[in-house]
Length: 447
Image (cartoon, rainbow, N blue to C red; front, side, top):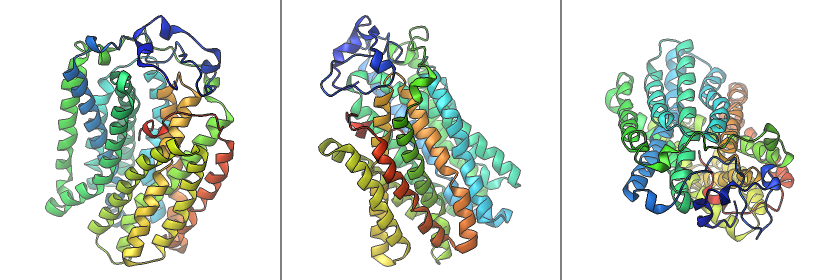
């Protein structure tokens, strides 16, 4: 899928050509002719612009982008709600960390499976159902009467977000086939922005109406689901982009296509990096509260961390186009060790600046790992996306529990300092990534 002319997608016969190296997940050499795996989920569909209403394309893309922002906004409720759950249910930070990881773990286990089926057939119903489930669960978890109820709601939210991500990313890819990089980049950024504003949004709701008012926060989820129904579900018969054809869809790749040392290294880097991301996002409000600041400030800090990460994703893609990708990845994994450690052990403006710089550098390699992994298995883009952004995210989130346990033993500041060491291990794994992977990785990742 490198240097591929748009016209190649317009000829069903041309796109049915199978390249043996591509089907085995081997990267194409720079300048090699564009040859696609017949089992890629986009094959067999007519992408001629004249067959698709421009208004329909833009409407569906806008709804999917808004859906990504709103869905991920609800996922971000976990961190600011955690102090309320710790106080109200009288649970330890170790238990709180384990509870916070449930959503990510549940979602991560399901996303690769749904991604595999998204590579075979595109049913847009899940993109509407996902935000409803996620919003309903996260808007009631603060009122859960006991710990088992909290666990059940976290699992429910994990299922909801897993329902949305793989098919939504596949739909964006399909709808924007001839102009895929910009729409996919906007889709990715929307998720990051939604995740960043989530803590501030739910704390504003609590500040105005108290915990009893949190169910009203479900309104954006209902509205975006209605938009998805109107623009994607109802429009599927009018718009061949969103309708697709189950019989013409890819039949999926053999499991061995996803078993390679290079893919494992990229996946491990993503998982370790995610462990640091999630630890800081989850415990930032609690850390700042322990230092005497308000929960609102703590939620704002988590949002700033995520927003700076969104800038870092775009910056990482730009740098990867100018310099050797493995070097960019290695530097982006080492810099946050220094910046985030400095954030934890300084105060005032300097501490704030280090938090921003740490977020930018930590997130910078996100799109590189995902984009390079997609190059390894070009016929299984949705499945790889589920592995890199679903399974890797959930695996990294498992570090929340030991970080919480370490915080109970030595303090939260020391525990967060210790977790930064895993980024050194991630940097060492960059050596296992092949140099031959090319392409504009900066537009590939989906959160």
